[in-house]
Image (cartoon, rainbow, N blue to C red; front, side, top):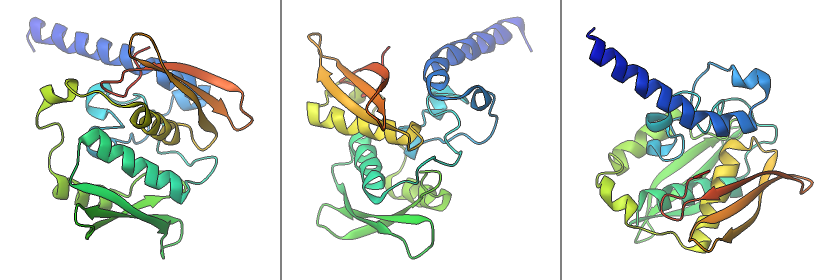
Length: 216
């Protein structure tokens, strides 16, 4: 391998590690920081950020069992946030109920007319969408971020930011954390607190109203 190519790969690896570390370190225990298992891509890469942050990213260790099983309301919130981030105006979330399959949650996906187009299945223990469901969803929706430039032209409202922040905590909070206060700052970003179940603040983060992701 040529030296120039080697240096480029090394630089990309260093940049990925620098971006991934803060959130992983905040919410992972010492043992979990060394976890080398499967990493969740997120629905079409929107939440897992696998393609951008690489292994050990924001949701490092997400495949482990949750301390508290995922609820039907939380599963519905995850789907609502996924559709919002992907800009899928022609799809909406329907009912979320316990599946006939033990340990699973079914979330109905509807089209604009209210017809059922897919039933999304989540695992209560991990909080993750089932692999088969993700595959079916990719075929239904297609490749995300077709217009990458357009994602920087939008601006989420206060209610939308609350939804996205709540979904973020559900995804990486392991069932132990919850969203506290979320407020808009003078410069147009949002600050959100993450608390434990007793209401004690565990983390405060600043979120971009354009991407919905933490910026600090």
